[in-house]
Image (cartoon, rainbow, N blue to C red):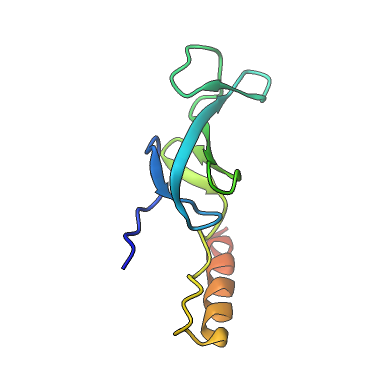
Length: 104
């Protein structure tokens, strides 16, 4: 069975919350104008605690405020294991998408 590593701030490799693949993450910070520019350890101006992790597999990103991932909501979809009934996968993915929004 494949090991799952949950996304965590500044962790170099984890399962991407967009594609679900265990992949390297390229961390960046936003500069004072909101552009994604500087590496995470850069002394340049940046929003306090606003960082991005870019997945090297799907090239999509996750957005972090402090130590909390604020985008995407719900994490990666349920694995497409052939043992799971299609209905179970659809219901699980729907619940994952709705649950974080129900607390707003």
